[in-house]
Image (cartoon, rainbow, N blue to C red; front, top):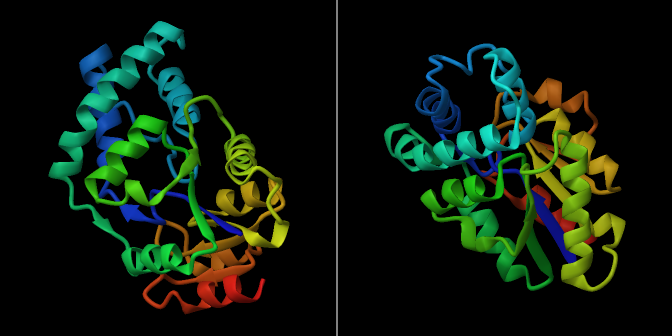
Length: 226
């Protein structure tokens, strides 16, 4: 059995900045902070890590109560920002997911920095959430490697056995996706549909490098031969 663990933002979909806009709106509605996300990096990071930096930047104490308040506001704003921003499913993704599901020997999961409910809202907006059997999410972890380890545990539970290393694939659009795949001994596809170009992704040494999934055959061939 093969397992493909997909990142969300920049890999499956582009939300057109809806996630960042929802966090900005949450800082304003929860704490009265305007433009609170300015200067904070988002690419490849977990929501927990981003939240920590947002609180530090804006002088908000990182207590459980403040985290819960912020995340509740974020989840409330996210459907609205998804509607108002020009998001899309990225090239070839819909066909790729359909072909992987027809494969018969592939299990699809998520490995994302999004919190679980945020991932459900984003992928539900684009009609993709039901493709995925399980996932590692960014609710608890600051480091993406730890999200990968969480996802690996869920893979073991789903398969009732440890996955075979060359049949476990991580698909993402950042060097951090490549790094976290190595943390669990997985193969990795780096796709240049996010903010990182082909040269930058190539420098992280993925097993497969793609401009996009308009032609999914390179990945499908690797799954057939690994």
